[in-house]
Length: 178
Image (cartoon, rainbow, N blue to C red; front, side, top):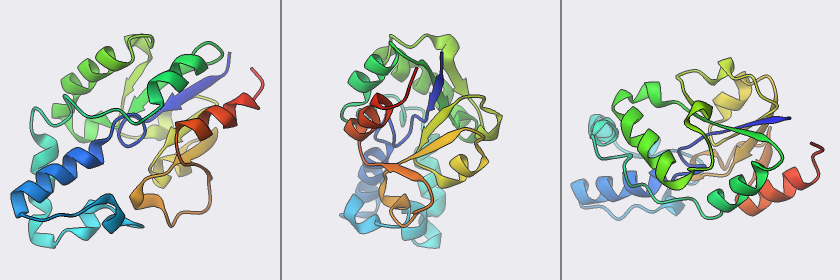
């Protein structure tokens, strides 16, 4: 059975909306995802606010109740009938996120066993046929086929197969043989 690894943040879970909510609240701003086209919040924010951006991520409750990306549950459930699904998240870059991410996955993706959660720092260790991720650097290191999941920060990247939403993910894998 072929194996698909799926990133969590900005692919399954809408971390950007929570980061923007906290940023806008803390700094009395009204930044939207459209303001970030081609760059991340880290590049948008002034240097003197970047530590606060990190502090938001390190908060115990940041990853606990993130909104789902539309279609992720349904498409992954359907794909799990034909493929081994693994969740590969760079949780080691934010160690406080391990528990909240685990609980979030259990709540929203109970059909994927916890033994298929990969909490890592460097995704080059993944052994799979496919990786769906929003960060081009993760796809660059990956040995299988990478699919770039669209997010505001990667809109200028052109060197990977791009999927804009979960409907496009479903369509891509509809043509892939088991």
